[in-house]
Image (cartoon, rainbow, N blue to C red):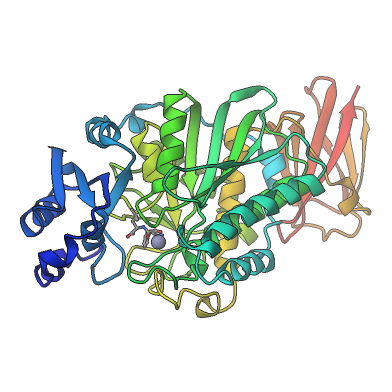
Length: 483
Ligand code: BES
Ligand code: ZN
C-alpha cells in the first residue's frame, strides 16, 4: 500500500490557479480523498454519492491531478466513469465475482507440456525495447496513439503469417482518447460464446508533464508477455474450445479508462466471460519469489487466484519450469483487472514482485529495459503462467504434436503395449505420460530404460498421445493408435 501525501500537497496550492479551465468528468474515488478535495477545492468537485468508503464524484481535470500527487508517483487515485449513471452504478454494484463457483479443471497436460518450454526471453526483451522506443505511449500523445495502432498491426501480422484467417484483431475505439484498445480473438470451436481473456495496458504515463515515460516495465513488459504468449500459441496451432481474447488496453494510466469501457460494454452485452487475467509489470525481479498474486479482496477473485496457484503447483512444482509465488496486495484499484471485477467478472492480477519491492522507476524517464538489466527472464515466468491459464480454461480442440522434434524417439503399439526406444534422449531420468485425444492424462511411467514398454491394457480403441520428457523437462509428443 502506497503512502498518500494528498493533504500536504493540496494545501500548498492556490484554489484560484485551477479555476479557469473547467474540463469536468465523472469518476469514483475513495471517500476520504473526495472529502479532502471538496474542502480544499469546493468549486472543483461534486460528491454525488458515497457507499462503503467509495464516492462517485464529478470533478475537473485539474483537481483530479491532485489525487496523483503522492510520493511514489502512483497509488490511490480515481477510476474514470463515462457518465453519472456509471459512476453511481459502480459504487452500488455488488462484487459478484467471488460468488461464482469456479468449475475450472487442470487436464490439458499434453498440450501445456508441449508449449511450456517455448516462451523466450529474447523475444520479450525485443518487444519491450521496441515499445520503450516510442518515448512515451501516453494516450494523448501522437506516439501513444501510433503505438496502439502498431500493436494491432503486429498481432494481425502474426496471425496472418500463421495462416490463421479465423483470428481477428480489432480496434476498440474510445470516446475519450484517440488511442485504441486492441482485441485479438481466437474463436472457440465448441463454446464460442464463452470467453477467457488475458490483457494488459498498452499506454504508459507519468503524472507531471505526461510526455516522458517510456514504460518499459509499466507496461511494455505486459504487452511483450502477451505478444510472446500469442507467438507460442500460433506456433503450436492452438485451437481452443472456448473463445480466447488477448487485449491491449488504452489509457489505463489516466484511470483504467480503456478497460473500464470494454468491461462495461461486455457486461451490457451480457457476454459470458469466464475469467480474466491481467498482466501489468512482469519484468522487474524484486522479490525472493517469482510471482506475487495480488489478492485484494474487493478487486480480485479469490477462487481465480487459487486456480492460478493450482496451475503453478501442477506444472511448475519442480524442474526447469519451477515458479515460486506468494500473495501480495495493492490496497487500491491499481490496474485493469479492477474494471472486470467491477463488472461482475472474475479477475486476477499476477504481479512482478511484492508490493514495495516492485520496480521503483515506473512513471519516470528511468522505466527502461536497461534499468531492468537488459534481460526479460522474469517475464518468461508470466508467459508460462499465461499459457497454462489460457490452455486450461479454454481447453484445446486439437491436440497438436511435435513428432518431428525427436527424430530418434521411436514408438509402436503391439498387443496393447506401447513399445518405445528413446534413442538419443538420456535414459533413466525420462518419463512418459499417455493422454487421450482430449488431453486427459491416463498413464504415467517414470525412470524409463532406453528401450521398454508401457501397458495399455484397458484403454479403448482410438487415438492417443504419448508425451516423453527428457531430464531437462523438455517434452516430445508422439501420436499412436490402438485398434
Ligand atoms: N502498473 C501500475 C499499477 C501498479 C504499480 C501496481 C505499482 C502495483 C505496483 C498501473 O499502470 C498504474 O500506474 N496504476 C495507477 C492507478 C490507476 C487507477 C491509474 C497507480 O497505481 O497509481
Ligand atoms: Zn502505471
